[in-house]
Amino acid sequence: MRPTTLSELADAVASARQVLPHGAQTKPALAAAPAGAVALDTTGLRGVTEYHPDEFVITALAGTPLSEVQATLAENHQYLPFDPPLAAAGATVGGAVAAGINGPCRVRYGGVRDFVIGATFADGTGRLIRSGGKVIKNVAGFDYAKLLAGSCGRLAALGEVTFKVFPAPDDFMSIAFDLGHIDTAIDAVEVLARSPLEPHGLDIEPPGRVHLRIGGAFNALSAAAARAETLIAAPATRTWGGAEPDHWARTRDFAWAKGAELLLRIPTTSRQLSDLDFALGRIDAKRRYSCSCNVAHAALPARALPAFAEELTKLHLSALVLWGKVEHLRIGHLPALDAEARVKAALDPDGRFPGFSPGVPNSPNPRT
Image 1 (cartoon, rainbow, N blue to C red):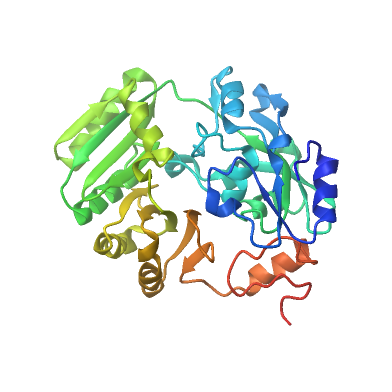
Image 2: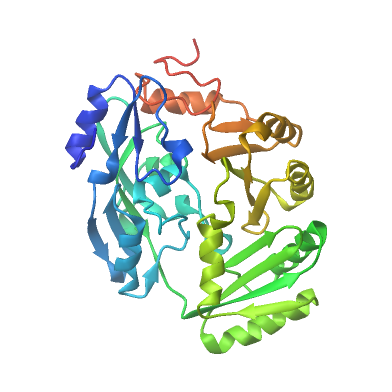
């Protein structure tokens, strides 16, 4: 099914026994409909419907490519600060919100959930529901829109989303530090995160290369870079211009993971990262650590998944599978699921959307 209007979206959900919405399928594991479910293609819902540059708010239909939104914002020197991945590959507005994943700039401004101020969606009964507002000062009511961020199409079908946006920095500069070891890199990231530099990116490329991105007026960037180099006191390389955005684009769009059978997103902390890196190193996984050590992305062969899932459970970490064929989207340590089951029962009482986690059934009464 490929609706082209919001009313058609609601009708499509209501007419299906089970349905899974998807956008451009740039995160294919999240878009893979289970057996018996109808694929609901939202790319027919396309276009920027409202844009108020003076209010720093933009509204677009769920199937609108993020690249179109970014181009519209760039005309007024504005941008999406959550730094959405895979925009160049065709990722859509609804897919970005539903997946709940972000680029390196999240370290400063927060994730996609923090920038969604309103949404229109079809719940599991086929009702169209509007949550939030289209200008920041008019946002009221229960914030369903934020609840849907990261739901991966398992609670509702997004039809339209309103974002708050920010002025784009005048320029960027990156500084890379070669520190040789993951523990030294983690220590450096903690120092930089506590500094007044306000990084726009703070990542680790194992085994020990730290990437710092700073933004602002060009004249101030060299002084900020010098301060960072003083704080870390290690060999450093500065880049700007064409080379600087190329590195962050490759990081954001997972170019380093090309050809991998599986790509996982793992929320973590700096205290857990050393043990996680050791576990990933034992299976020879490619990996990157982003957002000041709070998010790991790992590319690994499918055969390594069962053993790695056990390692995640031991570390009390969980992962979301973005690429690859798997039985469950979430692996590793899963918290108590009662709250998730209650939310699903409220938004999807007839079980039209597939379950998100093992143990959350698609029944009108998930506690039976």
